[in-house]
Figure 1 (cartoon, one colour):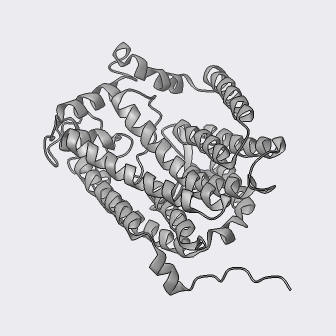
Figure 2: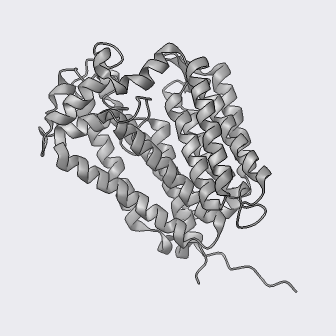
Figure 3: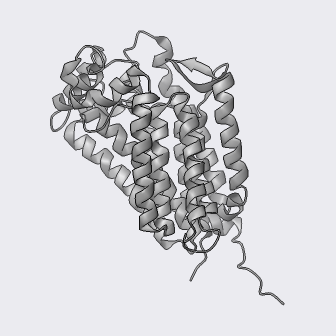
Length: 376
């Protein structure tokens, strides 16, 4: 008779195993985000913008509900549905291209009354689940070329559909996510190198033959923002001025002149350029504290990956951490002029209902891997 599998922990045991420090740090980040959004919008002439901090709070509550649900759900059961989840993700990406609402020349959202959904954010986690399920399907290491190739194809499909919207910032997250998960899964280095070369070729082709001129300008303006200071270089110039004027301790909460006076445009200060508001109001010290909060989340997530008892659990945790890191690196980088301006939000902090729900769902997946790992 076959040996019985490990007993599933009870609800009480699951709650006892929750990583409360990780949950508390994530909650601190989300709460800080609501406060920063209020500071960035309270002087806006648009009454709708002044209510964005309330909307962020509502979405955060939904996100914590989803976080708790995913934490208590065994991630291995969820992985069995990963192909269907990714297929549904492809379907919703196609649907948004056909029926979505166009905002700022991008068809990236569904809108139903006061509800707005951005499918690309959810598909990032769908791809994490799919790759975590698919890559080790022949064993603990990926030594089959076609497994590598199909993983790249699944990732490329997500990128292509998101670029079609066009949403360059979200599309740029899928590549690093796939690369890091494949590295952890044990993909041979020569295949990874081949993937990098192919990705570089596709990126160059997309830049010259796929992207619109305004997207090309956004990608290159960070190299020389002074070339077009009133156009594509304007946001970066004002962002660097805001962060630099914060000094060591900042101007104080709700005292950021660049944001209050509108030099840092109010339509981006609460979302893509929220770090500029933080840098001006809380200075270098506040920025370091925020980076420390991110570092704690990433290190705890990677610790969960290392301590996982199976490759799929490690890949789920790695994928979520990679998604967070890519957003953090690109968002902060673009506000200080070291990466292209792509319109990518800062995890837990930037305004964005679907995005904050996605981030908290990622925390829920980390908790699930932590809770359901089998003791030694």
